[in-house]
Length: 84
Image (cartoon, rainbow, N blue to C red; front, side):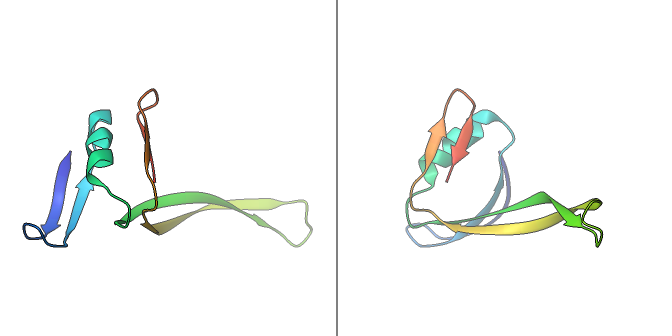
């Protein structure tokens, strides 16, 4: 796991920027993240644009930042997936 940035004090609220590098890192994050925490992630999606004649479409990639308030979390050990 790569720790890029941290801004917190012991027993106080704070912020960290973490990049998981192995599947075990997701298990550690599962045990750190609690309900009520906020999680932010960058992602991209492929968006299809329909042209005027309705037969032709073009596609482009759109980058977005997703900000979530954690209500529950789940870790699937078979696929090493963390769901928030």
